[in-house]
Length: 82
View 1 (spheres, helix red, strand yellow):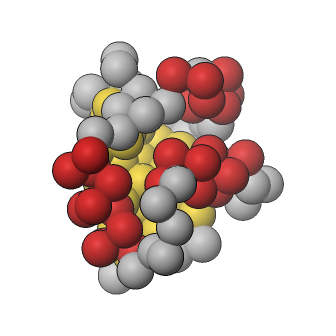
View 2: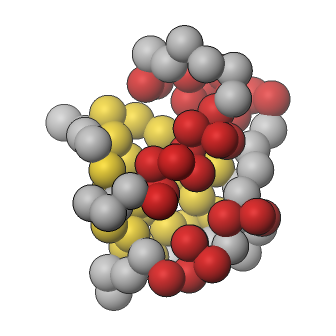
View 3: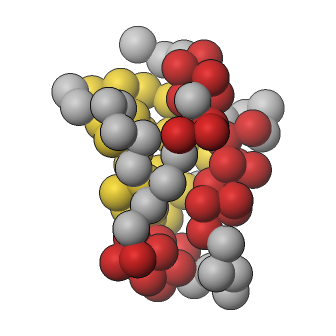
């Protein structure tokens, strides 16, 4: 299943933990502390592609993969595509 509807409809629920912020910043070499806002902006981009596998959404955009829990909308991690 490849759709962006559900993640986009739930942008207001998107969040992460303090450890998640640190992990995402480290993995993507981000300079911002506003990681959730950065992720929301990425999700809104036209090229974003979301796939649900089990309990998580995997969103691919700009060479990154964001992993988001499908029920709580917690951003678990993000990494650069290999």
